[in-house]
Length: 332
Image (tube, rainbow, N blue to C red; front, side, top):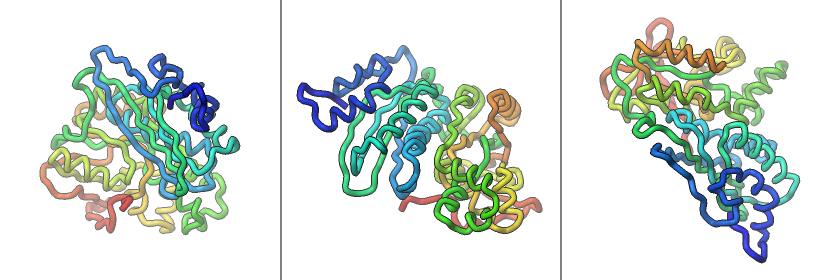
């Protein structure tokens, strides 16, 4: 995101909307085409995620919620790694550069950048005739060797998850006018809560230090709890047993499942939760739950890591295994 002596359309767009977000000295006010991220003996954690129109957000979603989601899905990754946000770079592929869209987008992005102490460091803007796309690469800091990866889960570890599971997938169905929208036709509060969970994730950065302190392995739930747990187990060379009745559901999701408006598979396999999934030695799981309570974030134990290489097993309240037709959302 560099300016020149003869400002181009891109340069004036950057100066107008995004220069105020570049508060870190290493961003050089976006006048250079590179930035400096200072490190004093820490490891720099790097994560990148894109949100694409029609896949991660809908064309008529408010631009402010699109901006927040684009940044927050990356902040969620940093939280699961136990990292403190340091900054981000932004790539925008836009069909147009109308103020009516860009102003609320930049304002919301700036608000979140400030709230999460993750300033804009640079990036690029391009035009596209196709779906809009916002790609963010975020940087975080951890003490050397302390990033929480996916490979450390051990048999006997408890499996914990933050927040509630499945709301975003249900919210997307509401926005698309699907069966959930019909089932909640008379419940405006539930519809608004679920759609908000899809549009604006709540990254659990307040728990990053506790995850670093207690977890043996962690990742964020982006493609669905069942599928993401399967990835974590494969990376660690273990398996898992999940008590489905323990998986935390919101009141709206639990009601939909209880009245058979939706099967339990949808919350378990639905994407866009952006909660933290982690494994913790049994003796320390209460400490993470307590840390969550102090931060105002529910943390729930949902199962146990076991030896083996088979896929995680999901057991109902009678101990019978559920045969899930799908484990996660897939982009392909």
